[in-house]
Amino acid sequence: MSATPDTVTTPTFQLDGEEIPFQPGQTIIQAALAAGKYIPHLCFHPEFKPHGSCKLCLVKISGRPAASCTTVAQAGLSVESEIPEVQDKRRTLVQMLLVEGNHFCPSCEKSGNCMLQALGYELGVMSPHFPQIFPVRPVDASHKEILLDFNRCILCELCVRASNEVDQKNVFALAGRGISKHLIVNSESGRLADTNFSATDKAAQVCPVGVILPKRVGFAIPIGKRKFDLKPISDPGASAGCAEHAEGGA
Ligand code: SF4
Ligand code: FES
Image (cartoon, rainbow, N blue to C red; front, top):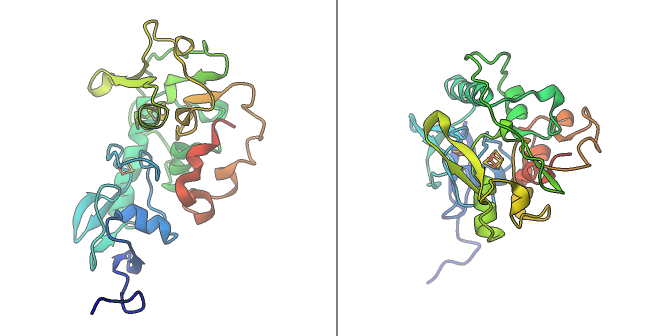
């Protein structure tokens, strides 16, 4: 006799001691977010395949470190997320990202809507800790609708994936290796104006930081009244569905 929906028990795993239900095939972060439990992340986006590059979603599973965005949930797992050891590693990762680029939050249009800034607050980042690298990354203001400020890029490749998989335009790519790795525009001149990029592209909506900014709307919502000014990123109302990705620059 086949099981009816009434007799099927939803599998669960434990996250910081709390039972989290999951659907077969869901990753740990997907199940946690669906249950209203926040796990820090930057390169994860619910509409894209896991990328596993930022490592902010680090957890411990049965004592071993794992990326929760690439680890499929299994019944009975014991997952630790909000423990000092893991939070310390996440804080270090955020500090490294902050010194690898040029992030001047007080003058950034994305302040209050930026996931990196919000994670800095969430994890108690009080100083850069590491020496600033101050890379030289000129902005690209050539496009009539969009400003590109490469200084803030954290190399999550969400714009690369969105432009490739959703917009089918392949406007962005990463070039170089190691500390020299950087975002480029796929045009002969390297300028955004010389592509078919549009402000309505998915790639214009997904940047978690302040690189891809719509022009002329920068401070339409004043700093102090933006998403993460009002609620911490860990608040289910702020992080639900990762809608923070979709807010553009204002
Ligand atoms: S521009 Fe934004 S979305 Fe694209 S790789 Fe850099 S941080 Fe990620
Ligand atoms: S969110 Fe999992 S590695 Fe970036």
